[in-house]
Image (tube, rainbow, N blue to C red):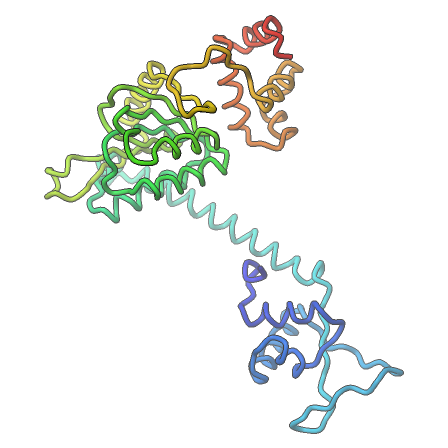
Length: 342
């Protein structure tokens, strides 16, 4: 726990051992933590220097301090400095370090984009090999902050289905808007019905088409990944990573076109179906969002009041508009009143 604040394992062991008692000697702490006496003395000196631990003042009327077995002298006793005082500077330093890392990340990313030495390479990046393709795929999914757009078709080659599922769960937990268009053949694999049901329940939006022209993943509309024909790379799995450009815009438009024509998948008590149920009603969470929107509250404030991400509010609003067949939020409010949703 304390290693996140810059303490090593031995330091954390001594620190947590002191939490359980007002004061303790080095010998007592060594026995409780399992560290050697020399290592315990070194760690205590380090903690005292860093202001996390202090030497306890001797009391006038208490019991005598225990004697050190080796020297016969009374050993020093130690106590914790109040954590609210001692650990605050470490927390501030870690926050500052994170901010510096984010600034460096932004600077390097922008520098990479603006590099003029290889203009073609700054738009399209070729990745060859199973490990490299899988690594870049996970980078795209785990780095997404707002939106993931995915085409699923054919059998997985570089990234197993179970690894894909882990990345999907991570993205959904972060509140990423996750939309998938899948070819019908992709859902014929073993256990796919169970995986699809779990994904939709977790917030994945999935639609079905008869066929797709390619596999693809688009992350935050900033970069996309498309597999290449293995015959072009000596039989090894390969892909291109497309950065912000006209080509990326075309891929996004292709996704939106297929998404608009695809059939939504819904979970029911008997399984997963591609046809919309005749009596489809908003969920409780969607009605909560609707009530706040009709009260004139912004998406950001609604997300804060409901304890969800703004992407979740937008996703629920879009589904409400799909259910209502509305093109605007004004039409959504009119339909909600007419249908008696609230």
